[in-house]
Each structure stands twice: as C-alpha cells, then as structure tokens.
Amino acid sequence: MEFEAKVSQLVEHLFREETGKIISALTGSFGLRNLELIEDAVQEALLKALRLWSYGNIPPNPAAWLMLVAKNHALDHLRRDTRWREKEEQIALEQAHSTSTEAQLIFSEDEIKDDQLRMMFATCHPALARESQVALTLKLLCGFSMEEIAHAFLTKTETIAKRLTRARDRLKTNAVPFEIPSGPDLTPRLDAVLDALYLLFNEGYNASQGDDLIRRDLCDEAIRLTSLLAEHPAGDTPRTHALLALVLLQAARFSARINFDGEILLLQDQDRAAWDQKMIARGLIHLERAAAGEKISQFHLQAGIAACHCVAQTYDATDWKKILQLYDMLLQIDDSPVIALNRAVALGRVKGPDSCLAALERIEDQKRLSNYHLFHAVRGECYLQTGRIAEAANDFRCALSLTSIPAEQNFLQKKLREIAT
Amino acid sequence: MTNTSTKTFMYLLRGGISETKLSPEQMQKMVEKYMNYIQDLRDKGHFIAGEPLEETGKILSGERGRKVTDGPFTESKEAVGGYFVIRAKDLAEAVELSRACPILANGGEIEVRPIQKIPGM
Image (tube, rainbow over all chains, first blue to last red; front, side):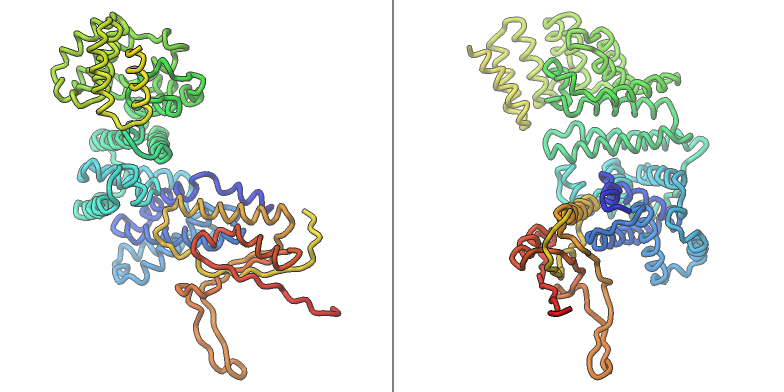
C-alpha cells in the first residue's frame, strides 16, 4: 500500500472511537466482570500501535488490527488471572479462540454496534448515579481518558477517578447484565440512556467555561451514540428521534452562536450562513420521525423550538408564535425558571417588551434566577426597549458581574457603552 | 522525490514513548506527528527505511555466544526502540533533519550515525 494511503487510514478520532468499540466488543466476549482487564488490554494495544506505527508502517486495516491485538492482550491477561479457570470464562475463552484469526472477522460491524448498545444500557443503568453514568459512558464508549473527562467537567482528575471506580463497583455489586433490555424493562431503561445522553450533550453545549474543542467533542459523541440507538430496533422510538433531532439542530449552530443557552438573546447577530445545513436537514428528518408517537416529550418540544430557529431564513422571519406555544407546553412538563425565562423572551417577541417584563415579574422562582446573568440581560434589554435607561444599565451591569464568558462580557460591555452615549 | 545525496545515515531512536497515561486521542495525535515527519522526509527524498524493533531479544557475548542474556529492557531509556535510514548530503544535514522527529519532544533521544562506505566497493 502506498504511504499516503496508509496515512489516510487514520481517520479523525480513530483511536478514540475504536477504544469504545473494542471495549464494548470484548466485554461482549468476556463480561463486565473483566472490565478493568479489558480496559487495560485496549490501552496496551493502543500503546503498541503508537510504538509500531510511528515508524511509518500502519496496517491496511488499523481498526481491525487494534481489535485483534487488544483481544489477544485480554486473553493473555485472562490466562494469567486465576479467575479465568472458572467454567463460564473458560467457555468464553474457547469461543474466542474458535473465531477466525482473520482480524476483520473477529466481530461483525453489527455485533460491534449491538455490543455498544449493550454497553450504553450498562453504563446508563439506573443503579448508577447520573453523573457516574455520563463519566462511565465517556470512558468506556467514547474513549476519553480520566483527564479529559475531568477537563470537560471542570473538575479534578481524582474526582473522576473515584467516580469511575465507584461506578465500576456498582456494575459488579448490582450484577448489571450486559444486554439490551426487552419487554417492559426496555422503555424505562431506554429513557435512562436518553436522559444520560441528553446530559452528555448539555455538558458540552451549555458549559459556561472551558475548552471549546473538548466541549464540541462531547456534543459529537452524544450525537454519535444517539444515532446508534436510533438505528437499532430497540432504540428506534419517537423519543430517541426527538433527542437526536434536538442534538442535531442545536449542534448545527454550535460554531455560529456566540452565547451559550442564550441563543435567543444573541440570535439576531448570528451568521446564519455558518449554520450546518446538512445537520439541520438531518435534524428535521428525525423530528419528523419523532412525530410518529402519541406522547410529546421534553425532547420533542425543545427540538421543535430549535427547528423554528433553524428554518427561519432571517431573525425577523422567526415564528415566535409557534415558539411561544412550544414553550408554554414545555413549561407544563418542566417548570424550571430557565424555561420560564426563555418563554418570557418568546412572549416579548410576540407581544412586546412590556409583556416580557410582566412575565419576568411573574416567574415565581425569580430568586433562583437572581444569580443567572441571562435573566438580567433579558430584563435589561426589555428596559432598554421601553426607554427605562437607568434600569437597563443596572441590569446589564448586574449581568456583567455574573458571567465569566468573554463573549458575553464583550456583548454586555458594548451594550453599556451604547447606553452611555 | 529525487535526491542527489549519496550518503546514508542511521537514526537510532531511544526512549520517548514510555508514557502510559496518554489518552487514545493523544496517542493518535502522536502517531500523526510521526507520520507527518516521515511524510516530509519522503517528500524531500531523504527517507529510505524505518522500522521498530521488538521489545525484547537476546544479548550474546563470549566465544560462540557462550553467554546469552535477555534484553534489552524497554523500560530502560538506553534501549533502542527503532531506527530510520535516511539519505543526506552530510552529517550536518542529517542532524538537522533529525531535529523535527517527534521523539525529541517526548523526551527521547536520537543517535545519528553515518553508515560507513567501504572504499573500493
């Protein structure tokens, strides 16, 4: 093979994605009880690749090579491990042996997909705390290191290490099965997976600080795993498609937005040409498929709102009436103050700034919003539009003191300068 | 691709990749750095060969190899992990070309040795 061709074999994030696939596939063979051993084997395989490939010899199928080497490392470890003599594992070992030595044929693409789904249901098992679910998903399915997870969550590596150890213990003590649930179990378990993936996406999308690149990676991983679910019969439900639509429609505007979670505030300033139209098209397809069900979930409504923004040719062409309607429905499911705030903004677009101000006053949980910079930014904007300059300046200053995001600080400082002149 | 240099050199690479805490993403980035380095040597016609060495082997000494020991141990920084053979016009250029090798940034070292030409052959 030509050298150039070999380089191109290393698709972006190959190591990271293969890590998730290999850990899942090997767990399918050797069981969750051998998880640490499997993780070590995969790490060894990657290091071996690093050592060998650095001299310019990348095998024709790098992914299959990694899978084969990792499997052999895992088998070596199991043989050394006294526990492997237990019958069950001996059978697994023999089965693993009987498979073809051809790397490509160890696991089929479908098997690997199924194993990743089994892994998702395990890492998002209700026996684990929500934050552990997300950390474990990132570690086992997305190939993130502890340092990278800590970086993404703006926390210490030791915290993540403890969280992961606890989560792995939980898997064992609760004898969590490595399987795709069926029957009446499926819906609640699937919901748990979707909720964790939603959280994973939001970690990336809404983080108030931190490295943009790694946050984008979190969003991409959430999209990848949700897509995997949506493609599988067990996960192919309206709610899954709604979540997939939501994450796609949000991520499509990732690089164009200046502000996090406050896209309504700064939406008018976004360059709509920078929105990813392919992603938007994909999102809309899944939104359509999400409509097949009878239940309307939060994901449906949020995706619907995102879709309204995505299809508007210009800011002025935005269908605020529909957005307001969707927020009203969303509030009935989740009366969080942040949603109430966003609803007030939509109301302001439909009925004017006075209505928005009145709605803001009515937000019962206002106290919880007093430290939320966007609350002050929104109210300041309303005051500005109704000519109450002093109150507007007050709110913008308050918002400025509450945000640490440079883009938002710049925006608010600009507002304050405009008021002063 | 044509390079008129006739002198050949061997880079002996030692140490470097012993870091086991690297994340998959970081490892891939590192492989890519090496690939780019090799690609650059190829583009300029310097590259002849490069191969990693197995981690362990045997060390023989004494008459007819009476003494055989295991080794080297990769943990030791002195162990050669692999080699490159390159073409350059003189030692100075060979040294210069080695500077971009990513192993140096990873704490490893490169021994640049001219491959000796035997006169008259």
